[in-house]
Length: 617
Image (cartoon, rainbow, N blue to C red):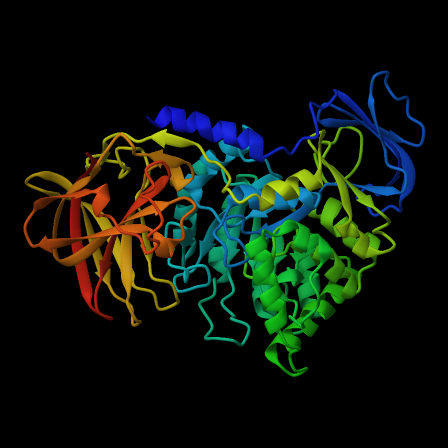
């Protein structure tokens, strides 16, 4: 029963994602354009010729091959495809449910053809790359990061467990963690090194120089760039001494000094300030481009946020940080430090795609010329992520990721929002069609696979489930989250999974053991061939089993309770016994992602649970 559902998903996909204008000819000539090539050179009236996915000519009067499709770009500016070096693709930026497919399209609709993504973990990389390369999830070139941090540091407070951010305190731990994650082939490393919380809350832990240096050494040996979450002057100096490739977020606690500038030059480190996520909210009107991108519910969210915002007082922490961020951009740019473009999009109020364009506007507000801001978002960013040989500039042999802008953004930076056409690997895309797909009420279709009966019997020596997925831990959010360990244990009946927890000091603390049904829970599980879930269990108290479902808010996931009595017993829960707070929703037979075995207890209390032989029946 699952196979027809999979075919249906692909059929729907074809109707909802009409990103290409038509079957593109082999050769396209973009004529009479104001070409800004991404090197910092001024605009020139030229013609660019694309064959398949490459630029084959760019000059004032190239020979246009017979049969080439002509795109007359008179009055328009041709740029290299834009970069955003700091995104969270699996977060919405609003209070809406995350829709990765629509988030990806938002970048394309703005001419952003390359992004760094920091919202994944190792198990997700292969399935995401397959979905994107196959065209099921059309989007920009994505450089996926694996994250590193410190125990109790930033990146650990969201309840995602230690599988999502590799937690290290010493060089030995860093080397060991790098060896664990390198088989996933990350494109970049993101290191949360700085625990300053902007004066709004208690600081979290920092990473020491020796540990960060170990990460950088192993990453560079593997040919991988390292970006850091660095927000203080002292943290920036540690990162530069460690040899990181890019400081992300910008120094917001003090003016940069000559010592940091010297360190950055010595290490060749670039700077990506993510101004878009730190800009003080002052009740400004919403950009027409942003409104075209947002779904109706997201427009309402953005409008409410604008109406609620007030101008901060000049001496507030927000404004002090903003002044440091802007002045530090001016000083570092003047000193010749490479400035790239990144936004932290996906964080609340930082909107996918549009934030990238707005970041360049904010760079101009911070002292860069419009041409310098465009160069930051093209050639410089390509170099910072190690892509200068393929992307970032308009030159013969480069991949044909290009964007046409109506107007002259090198003169008026606000024109950067006037996207008229996008070329992704030589294929022309229409921003209006992309916007329509974003605003469609349906969630982006995802492949759904029939799931085998046996989910997990804990007998695999490598710790993976029978579905070849990696069990992971999840907790309540916050820096004071509950603590959890789980292990594969042995008794007279064979192996089982044992969960041990100590609840955090908060209201309604909990922990969960997560059994993904597909690798990383990216693609979906079809369980329509079954009637329920069974498992062997032993525990003390009442527990919950939740099913993670695509397109359903976590608060509305279907859940059922079961009781542990101290002795092994088999529990069978029919799908009909699961309940959702959304009474209008049917049990998601075709869109499951994972099973959550959840333990809850009083704050500070200990809890345990054994589970085995998890099956569908």
